[in-house]
Image 1 (cartoon, one colour):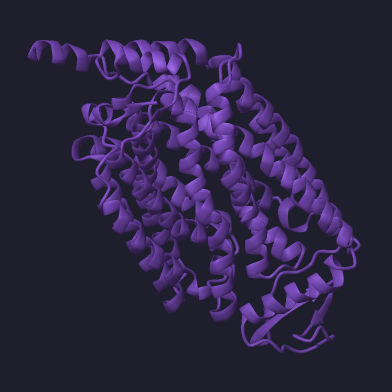
Image 2 (tube, rainbow, N blue to C red; image 1 turned 90 degrees about the vertical axis):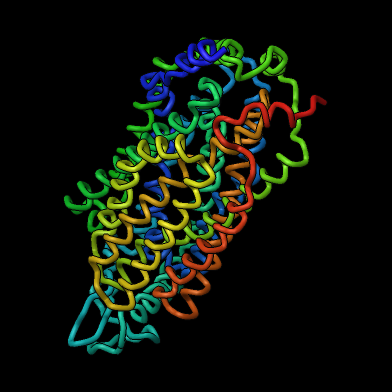
Length: 507
């Protein structure tokens, strides 16, 4: 018996190359969201003049749509029977539509830019011991009057006045541009929703349960590489003055990312053999005793299997924790550019974000190995604590006005986030069963999106009331709260298959 178990476990070897190919879909998704997170807040503030709260509502639109459509597309993909497989067809159509609409968004942004005769709407700059802003070469004060002298005591007040001027004098007279922008953005976000759940669900479709944390580490690393590609493109094009001073504004950057998305899509479609790999996973799961013959048949027949009360309780607790840590993390990620610029005067906000990407990339695989030793739940709790400490350092950067502390904070936050994200999704799909993977993938991302709907707006309200410095205090509170429900999760570990299988009831 001992020898038999040893032989079975020796078959649990991750096909790294196969997971790398699967991860190309997540890479191109992360390229898009890296671009979206780094540019959309700036576009809404600098080009359309929306305040923190209103821009937070717009930034939350993608999450509202995701809350509705991710479980829907995940469930549809579970039931899809196509020659390409049940996931690839969504990835193909969704990526092409998103790439086209991304370029359209860039064109509309340039249209708004040119609505003021292609003159740059200047950033706030220090002048005579205070702060000023200008539109088409003229200085303005808080009442939108021409001012030859400095009237603002802080850069935040000048930024607020500049945004108000743009909204009243540029966006409102050209309301049809903003309307067109929002319509295009709506369809772009629908396109991204259409293939996110199928793309993420593909990993557990082709990976046996004991190896999903390690596989997810590779998938997350691929996503981080995608974000890093976007940051690198932003740094290069920013350095060439395309982003800030060229009349076409973001078009070169958006077109480059859209083109790269299509390139990675082509490679993904050519290399990933979804149907063959999914069949192999089912055979291995039965061969190694991870799934019963009945489980495998349920998958083939798309038969629903539901959770027991105990597993369902753990499922709800981990989703609650997901909501809370995304309240914390996404508030930071969506507003870090504004914080770096307005509080610490850091011009190169792409570089601030890059630190977090690099440390997360380094941490992903070691974290997967640690979770294999001590368990996913304990590893996630450690990750929440690490992320909390990063937010403490970020808070100090603003209070002490020490810009380099923000770089240190982002490095710590990156490690904490990697520790959480590698293990949280595998825990959720561990509790799902058979043909439900796409649906529960949708539930997982809906929980995260629910938080991301609200947190940009709520954190934006706090920043409107008490200044941008309040951002990381907000993040600290929700990171602390996320620890509590996660502490009581009892299911979803990698090696407790008998618990899960004994707890499910066939409908």
